[in-house]
Image (cartoon, each protein chain N blue to C red):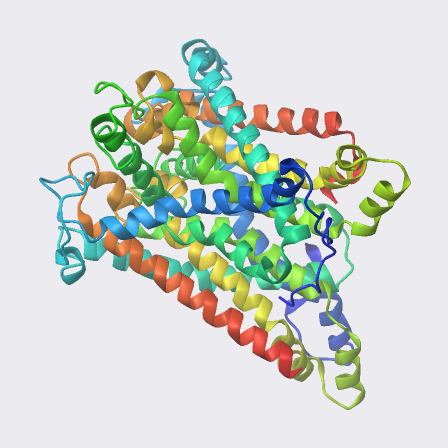
Length: 293
Length: 298
């Protein structure tokens, strides 16, 4: 994340007192960018502001007055605490599995020559290029099929859908993202470091754990972070495979027909602030590490 | 795949060499098996259902009928068109908004580069659903935008509303997928050697010509990747239509989820998913040809 050195600015010397257009024109792009960033931030601001609302009735759509009720009772709605817990557990387990499986594929793809490597590189992209709705729909058809003839009884039944099927779906869609992230990290890897370790007498296993792994760890951690955030946010695929089990997004989808509790904004804000803090901390750390090196 | 069988027998003098040769396959096997089980086989299963007849109660049998495809296309042509239209408009809007932003970050970002990039991806730290609900709050008939415009300023008539219109729906889609456009555009622009643009300006081009003849062609891979990353999820989206649109602006995603989750109509739901997938593949191929760069995917 090293910042590039000062990029050449197109108009470095300000034109001395030209026409209005000449003075305004260099500021147009930055101004437009600021507006776009504000556009991106608005819904987040709304989410946080409305988490302090005391809504009239059941729907938190209109500002009424400031209140801390939501923040003091963040899980005060039937099923909400359970759903948030499920989301966290699914995200944690699926991240661990997807990170391990994906890192292994990433290692194989970048460091070894084998038949079919080229096509595999392309195939690994397919799950990311498939619309989520198609991924969800096809998984559902498979899960349904495991409980109906001719498959019923011959394979473990994955229907009715629930916790297990959510987990399977999340591991599946996360693997490709992990592979791509880990591969990007491995591409700049200096293999001579491993050769040096081997020359000094380390075997493959020792070399891997003492040299290779510590070097790719930041990439693996980045992949795990990405997988975790994708999992905790996923709605479209999960909606197809969740049955009666609720994750946080599924719970929101179910409840918003009858109410819009302020707690949605509170939990959303907590997740947002937590993610920002996590990313901020890891950026600071890697920045410091880069400086030390 | 056959080499994976040599995982046993770590004895004998040559075992290390043999394990070494099998190692890539050992590393690949678990992940690939998982993807085959839960990505490839589901796709096959979905295709099977799309050419089957039956019901959840009686089970489905393959009858090689194309009825589900015919029914799907005949009944839901409008929803397909909505998907293409709204997804397409949102993609173009994302490109129009995203390009200047990516350009600014890449060439004028300076020391704010990482901060701006961070702000661009910040929406991802909030649930997609919550962001869309936020737009519903914002655009509500008596919400923070329309309320003052109607009552305090009196610019708009009291009956004016944005929610439930295609405008709100497209705005929501554009918002939700904008970062997917900005990031690949930024990556492509960042790679451009700025001296090329300066050279063009030195030689003959005014800034517009330099942009048209140098910057934009070099950014094409980013335009390609960004449009796909925006258009593909936008086509399949059904949350924006449900929360911000109205029944006549429903897209194909709404129909697929209704058929599969509410009506248990697996043949038609599967056929529609397959048409969506195939349509996207064709669109990608045509688009790649239209942009005419071979290394686009590289």
